[in-house]
Length: 540
Image 1: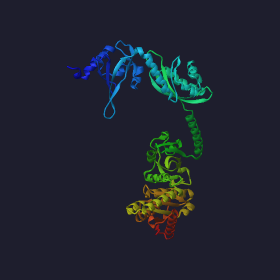
Image 2: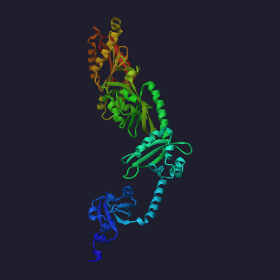
Image 3: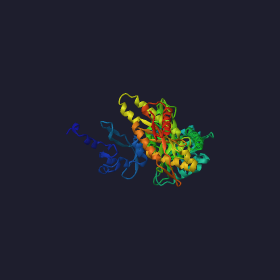
Image 4: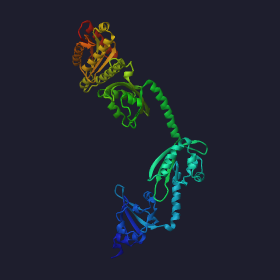
C-alpha cells in the first residue's frame, strides 16, 4: 500500500511525538502510541478521562486559558514540564467541538519558556488598575505587582521585606476586623473566595480605601496561601459616605413629619423604601429594597384605585405636571384598608424619566385630608378624585370613534347630603351622641355604595359621595337607597335617634366643567331637597 493511501490515523500512529485530541470539555478522545512511550500511561486507560486530571492542579487554569506550557503527571507520579499547543476545531456556528495538538516535553528549556511567560504575565499586570498579590503564612507577600508604588507609594521591596507590613499599615480602626478575616483564611481547611474593605495608610500618610478581592488556596502538605487584587475605591467610598450623611440628614427631617420615604430607579425597577414606609402599610421587618417597584406597589393599592394612581404619576412622567400627589386606599398588613397620600417627583435625563423619589403619608394622621372621627377621607381627597373623574370624562367624550361606550365607563355623579335634625340631636342628647350619629351614618353610607365609589365627610354633618361609571338614572336610584338607609332610626347609648338626610345630586350628563361647578350644583339641589322635604333632589 502506498504512503499516499495510508489513512491519517495510521500516520499519527507512526509519529514519534505524542498526539493528543480532546473534545470541547477536555475529555481525551484520541492518543497515539507515543503517548505511552512519553508519559508511561496506557493509551486505553487514558481515553475517556479528562486531560485536566493529568495536569498539575496549579496549572489547570493556565492550560484552560490557552497557555501551552504546564506540568503533566507521568505514570511514576512525577510532574514534568510539557508544551501542548492545542488547535481548536470549530463547527458551523464557530463553537469548539474538539482540540488537537502535539505533546512535547520541554523540561530542558523550561527556564526560557517560564521567563517568557513571566514577562507576558507582568505586561498583563500593568494593564490592571489594582495591586495583584500573593501571601503565605509566616512569609508575607510572595508576590506583589508594581502598581503598589503608584497606588500606595511603597516599593515592592519595602512591602515584601517585612512579613507584617500589611498588618502594620491597615488603619487602626479597621485592623481588628481585617485580622479576624485574615486569620480565618490562614487557618482554613478548604479553598474559598472572600472580600475585604478597609483603609490603608499610604506612604504619604493619606488614608486610602481598599477593596480586596481574595481567594484562600488550601493544598495538602503546604501552608495556606492567599491571592488577591487590591483596588483603590477611595473616591467611591467618599461618595457613599456623603450620600449616607445626606440620607441621614433627610431621614432626620422626614422623621419629624412622620412620612415614609421611597426612591424608585425606573431603569432597574428597584424601589427603595424606608422603615417608616413599611410601618404605614403594616409591613414591619420586610426588605427595604423591592426589585419589582410597580409590582410591589400594585399589591398595596386597592384594585379600584390602581388606575387612578397610575394615571397620576404617568401624567407627571409625561411632563404634564411638575410633580404628582395622589391619595388612595392601601392594603395594610393587618388586612384592613388605610388611606395614604403618595407623592413625588421624577428625575429626567435626555427627556426620559430615570428615577422618582418622594414620600408616603398616613392620612389618618393628617386631619386636613382625613377625618379621624368618621374614619372617612376629607375635602382634599374628594376634590382630587372629582378632578380626576372630570378630566377622564372630558377626555373620553372628545373622542370621535367609539365614544358612547367609553363615555358610559367614565360617567359619574356627585351627591351632597346633610343630616336632618342633627343640631337637635346635639342639643337634646349631647355632642357625644351627635358624634356617634356621625360615625354610624358614615358606616351606613359606606354600606350603600360600591367598592370603587368614594364617601367623604366635608364638614359638620355634611357628606359627599362620588359615584363613578354610572349614568344619571342609576345614580338617582342609589341616592334614594342611601336616603332610605339613613332614615332608619339609630340606637345610641340607649336613645332612639331619628335623623334622615337631604340629598342633592348632579350627574356628569350636565356637562359642567369644574370641581366647584359640580359642588355648587349639588349644593343647590340639596337645599331644594331640604326646603321641600324631597329626600333626594336632582340638579338638571
